[in-house]
Length: 208
Ligand SMILES: C[S@@+](CC[C@H](N)C(=O)[O-])C[C@H]1O[C@@H](n2cnc3c(N)ncnc32)[C@H](O)[C@@H]1O
Image (cartoon, rainbow, N blue to C red; front, top):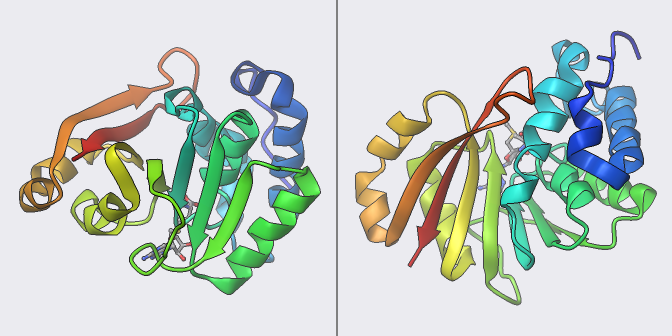
């Protein structure tokens, strides 16, 4: 492992008494992420700022209940949020077997009792209960995410989707799907100003 970014001071602020778990997860990802095809080699020098903290900044926007993270991949944001919010239950939904293996290993290694990992595509998964909130990062454009995520939410459930600078344009392009899935109270939030070196955009919206 080379070039791991030093931990930014914001990490301790965002994780509080869960910082040791966040450090362990970050170290595991730095040590194994590239070899296991979870992150690219260029990501190590920005693992904390671009990935871990970029996900952790979303944690205050979750409510106690069940959150589904679609396309968790390396555990971003699902595992990071589960570390930051032990009061919330998480279902990580990911179709790729080797990513599922990594997610399950990390759940055991970190002792995360608030996480369930499900191998499936979001459009095929059958959950025993509707979700209160859904997160996703780098999975698809907003208009394509709506058919995958809206049916998994309870009435009044919320989407909390991590997006890039194009978030407002993605909302503009999703008019048909917004009507079809009865999505309302759509906001684009910019999180982390004054705390993080790079801010994070989130599309937050309520379904039905
Ligand atoms: C670009 S990766 C992003 C992974 C992670 N969220 C992150 O930000 O690093 C996209 C992930 O979405 C998963 N994925 C793609 N289509 C999906 C679907 N229909 N349902 C659930 N997951 C899906 C892929 O297997 C992959 O792990």
